[in-house]
Amino acid sequence: MSTKKKVVVLISKGMDDERASVAWSIANGGIKSGLEVSIFLVSSGVDWVRKGAYNHAHLNPKDPSMKDMIETVLHNECRIMVCPPCSAVRGYTPDDLIDNIELVGSTALHQLILDGAETISI
Picture 1 (cartoon, rainbow, N blue to C red):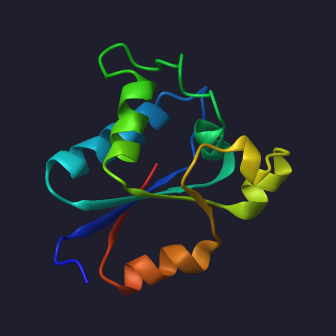
Picture 2: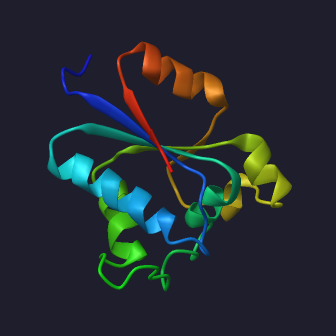
């Protein structure tokens, strides 16, 4: 079991909302601070992990590109979870999503909280 402090960033904002950039920036800051970061995507936040979706998005010119921030999360092997109904309502199948995405329900989020994770919801 990890001794690192844990944080889960719950992202509900999609490609049309600058707050999504803030959420991914907070996740990147957590990685740089040595936290064990997990991401839980719901609602339009799911769109970020559709293959090819984040490659050209740049919501806030003062933040790194969305591609850079999301790839930092991926390269640091952070857990990225996606709400199955949120994905299904958009017509996404697992093949539509980038690699290493977990389609899991809220029980996975609750378990992280029970294991001591703090949560940030944006």
